[in-house]
Image 1 (cartoon, rainbow, N blue to C red):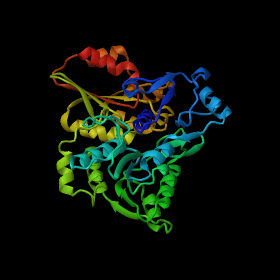
Image 2: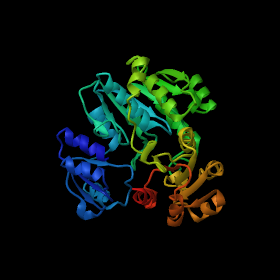
Image 3: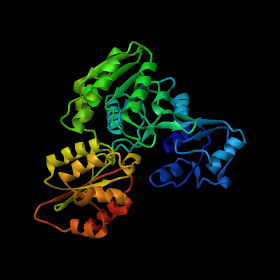
Image 4: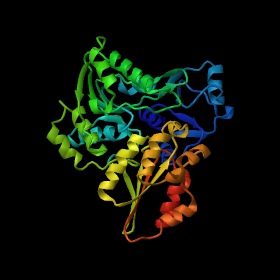
Length: 397
C-alpha cells in the first residue's frame, strides 16, 4: 500500500494515508515522497477524499472504514486501483507461485533494465540493485508479483485476478495462507480460474516440477483455456538456479537466453532473500524471508554449499506457521539441523521438544561464543524475530 501511495503521488494525486503503525523504511519513503499519514485507525484520523484505496488487512468494524461507508464515499481495492491507473495499457509480466515471486520479479526487472528496456515494476521487497521497489515509466512492460492472497474485505478473490497479464509465470503451488484457504485444492482452483480467464493472446509458463501432477493433468485436459500454455522444467538443483531458469523462460522471445544469463551475473539480489547481513572471520549471519518449509529447505540447501557449522533459527510468523499447519514438516527439518524457533506457541514448544527449543538471550550468548570453525546463523522468517536478530547483530558489531 505504501508503494501504491507513492505511485499515486508520482501521477500527480494528493495522497493521504492511515495505518495502524508505519515503520522505516516505508515511513521514511513516504515522508520523502511528501505523503502525509496518520497512525491509528481512529475516527479522528478520517479525512475527506475523492477516493479511498482499501488495503486487504482492513475489515468491517475499523473506525476509519465505518466512517467511509457511513458517508457513502467511493472505495476501491489496491489491486483494482493499480490495474486502472498503471497496468491497463501495459504488457504485464506477472510472476506467481508460493515461493520465489519477489526474487524472479526483481530478476526479470533487472534483466530488462540491463538490456536497455526501462520497465515499470512493483516488487514486494527491496531490490538491492534498484533505487526503489516500484517504478512507472513509458515502457510497454510492467513486471509485477501476482499474489494469491485475497484482495479486500469486499473482494475475497486473489489479487492476481486484477492484473490481466500478457505473460504469466507459475513457479510453484503449495499450501499456504491458512487464514484464508482450507487446503491446497482451494488455492489450485483460483489458479485454474485465472488461467481460464486469460485471453488467447496471453502466454502462460508453468513450471511442471513445482505443481502437483493432478493439477498439471487438469490444465492439460481443460477445454476452456484459451491462453497459450507452455510447460517447462525449471530444475531442482537449488532455488537460485530455479529462479534463474524461470527468469529465462519468462523473457523468452523478448531477450535471448545468453543475454539474460549475462545480465544475471551482476544481479545483486533482494534484501531478506538470502541476505548476508553480517560476515567476519568467526561469524556469518544470513537473513532470509523463507516462511514455508519448502523455502526453508531450499535455503538450507544453498547455505550448506558454502558453510559447515550452521545454526537454523526459524520464526513462526506467518498465519500458517502460527496455526501449526507446517509443524510436522518443520520437525523433519529441525531433526537434521541445529535449530531454534521464535514465536512458537506452548503447544509447538512441546511438539518440537529437543529438536528446536525457543530462542532466548542465554542461547544467543552461547551461540555467539567463538569456536574453532566459522559459525553461520541462518535466520528464516517474515517478521522481525522478536528483536533477536537485532540483538545478535548488536552483539557482533
